[in-house]
Image 1: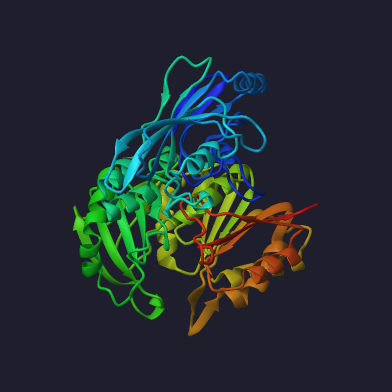
Image 2 (image 1 turned 90 degrees about the horizontal axis):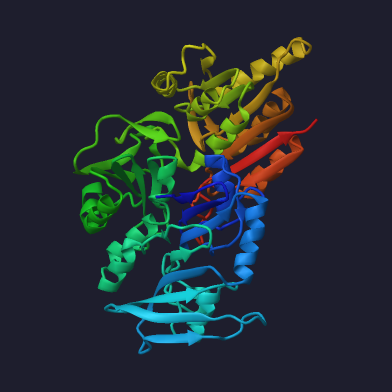
Length: 512
């Protein structure tokens, strides 16, 4: 459940771990910006939770409510109860009054349940200072699990959850019970509670906008080199060790898969072994089915749109989850615009633009199979009747060259594009023995897209060339566009320490 309470003054949200209350920089999404992007809700911060903290979070919806919230905090009339996991301690109930940052504060602690290696504690406060519970807990000798900043044991997330808020002016109890993995942690089921703790950072929060999300990103689950995605009622596990057969990987993940399927309401799924170079062979080296076998194809939901997806060993699923936020951004500006979706794949960007009221959307891709799936998606969403969805089977570079020739031949009659999406693959066959390399093609793509883009138009560039130079891609775009903003991928694709970003996304504006 994402939303706990909503009236004219207040919005109360069940915040997940892994997202800040407010964005840290341009191109980032804090919860404030996420609510605006995905739910068209304009909220004001009246209290905060740390990025790693989950649970009840209150927002104000009007300037009057913001002022009222300030008074509530100053008069300490709100009460907040948190739960956290920490190592065992002989203390059962105590109060910490240690000043923080030169300001008085008070936290009431109590132990509420003992476990095998860890215990669960409760913390109650009326007005919070920065990291108050974390700092007071550490000062009391019980640093939180996952809070390495204050010398707590390392873990995949911060084990701090805001369970209850008593807020003046809201009659109902604002409460979210602790995550299931808290209980599993106390029981000592290491592998199972680690994977569920990771999944809990995204699901069910993202269920308010989609039934698809990445539950475990590559590099987060230290026991295996895997990624786990949820598509509707099915899980899709990708293993990155080519030498490990999918069936063997499935057996090793059996307990984890059973746990994830229960908490994420999944019936079964597939385990795939990834291929580093799939272009001369099938897409995946191996595939194993577990639980109930998924259908050959089924529909996945994103906002009020549907997309055909397929979990097999010779085709991409059909919906790239790491572009969820980008699709929503494009939808937000597409109304009455001319849009081109280059390297369109199954046309998910096109679907969002068409649904938002674009005048025309050109989907360009050399792969006939991808465009066929794109046409299916247009039909599924009943967007074909207007006739403004155009599908062009052509090498993107040739299509761009044709547009440039049109502009040069008759510049006064050439109609520029208002929005262009350019999300090329890292490598692809271009037919007749030719190939496409994103690093080689990037400068020409940037130049040509800019040339056919309207003044004050927007271009969204993206690639997942993880071993490439980020500065090269960014600097190349800066030469062609007046504004280039790096966009963070969605919250279920976090930057893992020691690894390159999963995807690079740039929002480019051609100013007047």
